[in-house]
Length: 418
Picture 1: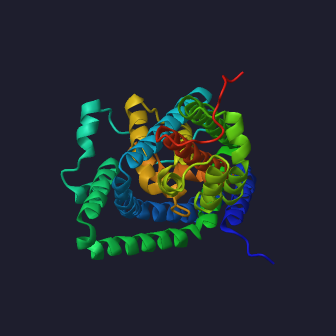
Picture 2 (picture 1 turned 135 degrees about the vertical axis):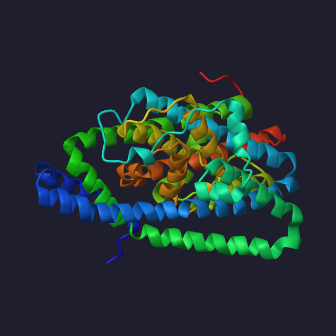
Picture 3 (picture 1 turned 180 degrees about the vertical axis):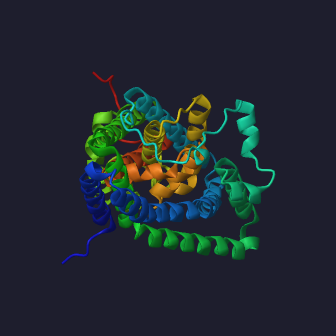
């Protein structure tokens, strides 16, 4: 028999945890159930898993971003193409998470889900700061202190600066580069180890939620899925196709028809890296993009273009904040946009690190990381779709760059769209 995948185990744990929690719900006030089943066994399994995730947030963010930014430094070799590509990816990422935040606030997927069993002192939302204070606070006066306190924007800034320094020094610091590469491999392996216990953690956390809330937790969860998928669809059809038509003059219908094979691979594998070969083939064979352009933009996009993940993070932030009764203000939303956009440089291509990277954003705005359990079990459904969005963005960026560089690409609109 084929070995069961981790995704299957998590899904089974999610369903089992919901059923177990609903079975406990009528008996939650019984001392044995409340103190020993919910208060000890379920709390122990869930809390240990959450602490393990928290443990890796800072080293994962710092090391992966340093490695990622040092690689991005090579874009200088391609001059203006590198600047255009990086600007496009960061710009669309900011748009993506903005769409998610706006849509989530309109639909309010967490409405009706009230979770009260948390320590408010651990989840106080950051005090509002002026825009200039936010910008000043990005630069750490003490990077070690920033890491100890978990100040993500400061950690991101220091990591990006470190990566740039490694790129500038080149061969002089090969040993340090190798150390970061090896450290990155180590952190990813630790992520894999911790994720092996995800089924237990998800079961305990979800069972705790449903044992205290009952059936009222079901509808908000479905609303979260629907809101995220809708935001992904809007981003693909309006942001991507709008830019594609306005800048590259390519008919969106023609693009989608030609690009369906790559979308299918992304949807089935949930891996941007796995779609690189077919993405390159489609852009070169069906659109006529040059090898020099596509060979740069597509691999880079697979590494840093995280629009789909940013959308998930935006909806999740609003969902979790509402569920825990925590009010976010405009400053908090700006912080989410800034953090998720900057973090996109090092987030992509990190296997199993989705929940950990989301915990980074939650930490930055003072939301409880325990809320990840509410969405972790259904993340596979969203992951398939957000990967398709990510690789679509890679292709759109490539076509736009090719057009602005004067390449003769096929699929261009010769007449106005009807």
